[in-house]
Image: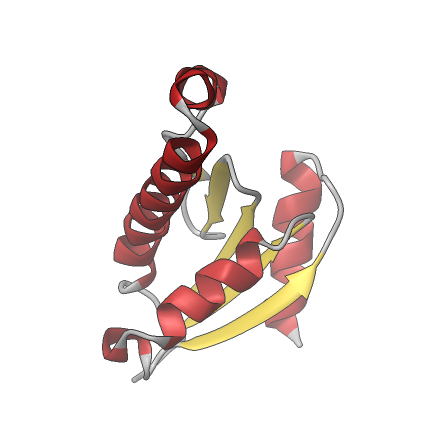
Length: 123
């Protein structure tokens, strides 16, 4: 495999900040925003739940497409979105050779996120 290609992902349910220490940070946003939620709620609660599930899955697919380019990934953030993404990845055999670590963290500045990722992969 050669040198490891590492990626840190700070995420919550609305956005994922992809941190590759060699490149600039990239952000992937969920399409399930307040406008979509408000529109779905006005129709009915069941529709909102289904719409949220579909959009979260699309959000995780967007992130997972990026993960395929790495050998070792750190998922971290303040919500359980990191665990949900980890479970999503575990169901797909495309990710079986990618090491995925999951850690809880608070909200962070971009500099704190980069330091967290650097510290994790230096171990």
